[in-house]
Amino acid sequence: MKKFTLPIFISVLVVTSSQAIVAVIGDAAGVYVAAAGSSTTALTTLPSGWSYWGATAANGGTEIALTAGQVGDQGAAYQGWGGVSTANTAAVYGTNTADPAQFEIFSNGDANGGVVGDDLLLHPGQIGNADAFVLVRYTIGDDSNFTAATGSIAGSFRELVVGGKAAAQSVDVYVYQNSTQLFNTAGGTTAKGTPGVLTVTDGAFNLTGLTFTMGDTIDFVVGTNGHFGADETALRAAISVDVVPEPSTFALLAGCFALGSVMTRRRK
Image 1 (cartoon, rainbow, N blue to C red):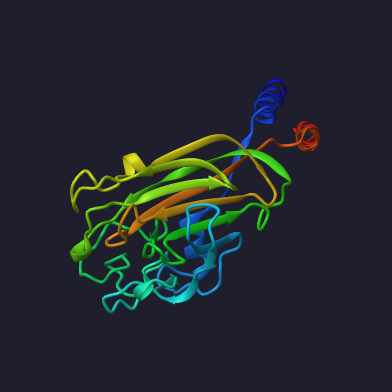
Image 2: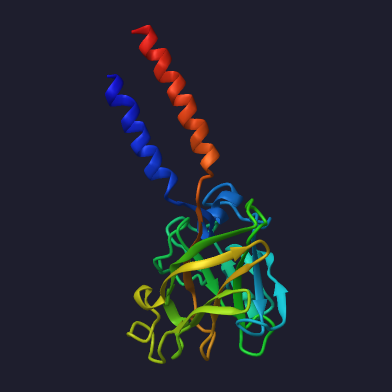
């Protein structure tokens, strides 16, 4: 027993101390539901670290803060964060206050594949308006306790085109770190239900080897790609950092384990 327990612990300790622990510091959809309190509660206060904006450009344009309230059109009673375009079509929406069987911004009677807690629904505004682009922003340092770290951003955009507002253009989507574009793609210009719609395969991103510092902004952006009709877009996004535990932490754990082993042997 003496030769079995302690060496195994040392082996695990060495491997663990040489590897980084991946910690998710920002989950776009999960934090929305958590801040709201449930999957069917309207969110009226911004989640810690996150903010929602309309802008005149994907990056570097004039920005306006979206406000909590009714989003969508066609008489929808959905609650989210809306902009200034007609019928609040610039929107961010993450809980389902209207109909548990649906998760969409337009009330056209069709479920569109958005999953509460996994997706945020984003919709850009009208071209030329102050909210032609809709931004979901995470600011590093607002709810994390580090000054610098390496990390990654992973997730996807996919267009959820349903009902009678399908336009010929799909969306264009972006990920920015501050003013640096990390990802950009767009759907095609063919009609609803065809390969022109931005799919999760084309909209997926896995951005690794990034360096984060306190105050950095990570923006997930959806634009109209020509027309704002039927531009509901599901965003899944997680921001992670690589945390390497300090050697002193492992030394403390090793000391505690050694003491426990001695006491165990004495009892035997």
